[in-house]
Image (tube, rainbow, N blue to C red; front, side, top):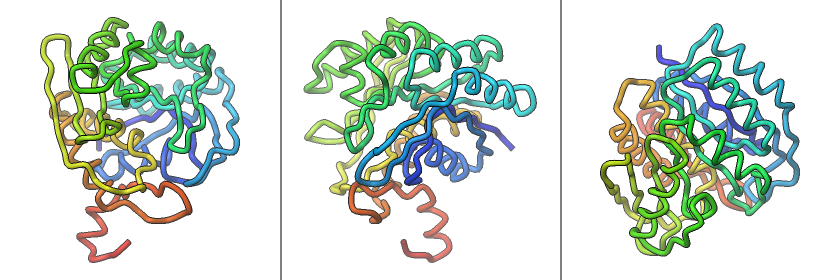
Amino acid sequence: MKLALTIAGSDSGGGAGIQADLKTFSAHGVFGMSVITSVTAQNTKAVIGVEDISPEMVYLQMKAVFEDLPPDAVKIGMVSSEAIIKAIARGIDEFNPEKVVLDPVMISKSGHALLKPDAIDALKKELIKRCLVVTPNIPEAQALSGITIKNVEDMKKAAENIMSYGCRAVIVKGGHLEDDAVDVFFDGNEFRELRSEKIPTKNTHGTGCSFSSAIAANLALGHDLFTSFKLAKEYITSAIKNSVNIGGGAGPVHHFFNLYQKAGLNV
């Protein structure tokens, strides 16, 4: 069995973060492991509290996993502080994973800041260069690149700017555009676009976490990067189509929609 590791924050509501990552790995037939960077108190409506894990404990979790259960791919999500970013960079340098996917989580679906302002520079300088691919949405791409994004051409410019920090590829997610859901892939040589229908639903909690985890899962399964991106986009589109209408805010995507369908179960 292939193994994948998520390094991210925990979501008590179960729709995003570590919980979404592990569900996504399982949905792809990949065994999931975790390094928790922060504990959040949140539900579908709001984040009401965040408490960081100590940087040393973040590193020790990585050490425990890599020394006994070396992952075939790694996904990094919420890394709220400069100290945690440096602890993760230390672990990456020591254990040298080949396939690292970075989802630069900055703001929760409910609008709560999850990355401290002084940690953005550390993310740029310490973490991006250690990753195979970075997967920002439009607000995150704007924060990382300094470019205001209004269309696909702006997404391409932002991708080029983010590439300058040293990663090998960038995927700018266009779900925040009004027209359609177009994502831009850039590997330093060419731009490629993937489009999908814009699904009218409020239940998109965990979309970014699940998408990046699906890329990592497919990389762990041996697919190349663009194929992993394509398969992940197909997966998350279906997960949004079959999203779960629970809670009073933005409900979660349905990670196991295919298993429920095969079993004849309704959500």
